[in-house]
Length: 264
Image 1 (tube, rainbow, N blue to C red):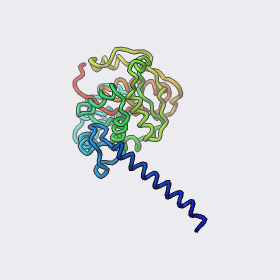
Image 2: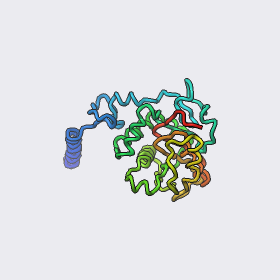
Image 3: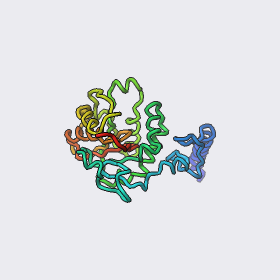
Image 4: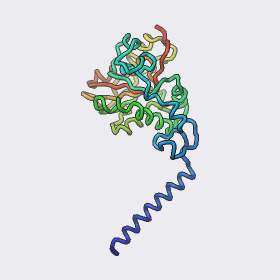
């Protein structure tokens, strides 16, 4: 027993030191809600989500019925549907779409904020919400092999210095324990922005924007990530490129699903 005393004492010292470090860190840098900044009480909010109860409730879309094909929230009634009246009009090359919630119900404001200023805590909170509310669709479907972001043009990255889609994709890959391939796809040219275009124009606009970057995707199930899914044109174009490269399946994932009248 005497011979074990130094080791036991060392363990006690290390544990006490770690506990003291946590206490000091909590005092100096208390956890705040990643959305509203409210000081978090450990008793009423799971620390790993990092949201206050009010924001957690506001962005709780778990019980919302969705279209499993395009991720829309307003085109189905009462229960999830395999497809909907909106997406039946289009050829979509991804196999399914998974989104956290509607763009118009607060998520749009958060996404716009991420485009202006990188907020890692907010990215973590949104991805963790997505996992809490949609994890069954991500994990209990066909097992995924890799995560890729919808790429920006290199000039856009240079100009803005911010890549929120890459941040979201990397965080998602980390939580799912999957390889993250930021260079798996490449954007070949700028192309006019999607905003303001009609539905058909959006599909035409992105048809030749993307190509395979580094690595290979043969016989893989790929998770392709964007921040917002509107018509599905961008993620469909990306999925087509991946499937031409040999991908077996492509799951489209976005934080927000924008819907509404988008023209012909």
